[in-house]
Length: 203
Image 1: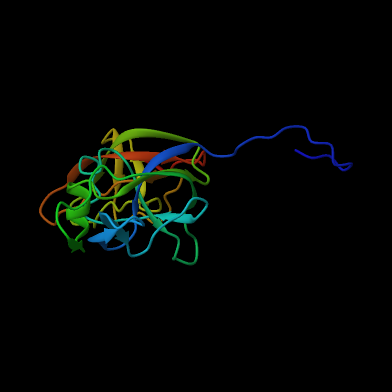
Image 2: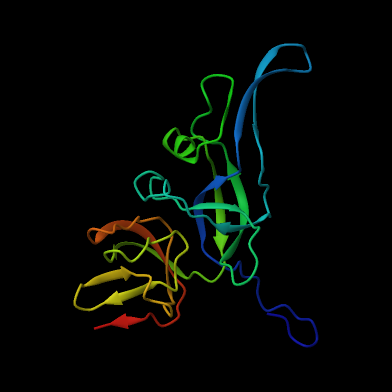
């Protein structure tokens, strides 16, 4: 906080850092050469993300809690309108790289093989995180990663629910995908972010 005469009262880093996976487009492994002429392996990413880049939560059927080992996935900010955004403050290497020279285009392959880099990200507005169960009601769409407006806490179910019939949910944001079904309700585990706003509660 800074007073009118420019005296600084404190320096607070806003937001809670969280480890995320980075989606950076197609991943290509190729042979390269060092400055000394030795062979080397080169990995390039079609849409590389750098420290301080702005990002947004990404949704895909592959981004389940189990598949991502509980880590949300973010991509470089491209959406417009009302978007839950964050900033990358550190980047670490991926667990693995492709074993042969190839271009990997399938998101599921990237996730299952550990090809996505990890990063420390601050997602603005989220005050706390907790692992929760979300129930996607029968024939009511999916619980998308980043979903907020479609989520409510249901007292009779004793859990968070997600439904295309819900349009005013707020305060609770699913950070993983739970894919719904037309034949039955589907429950799944997600990391949930809480913004501090009142959460919609159903009877």
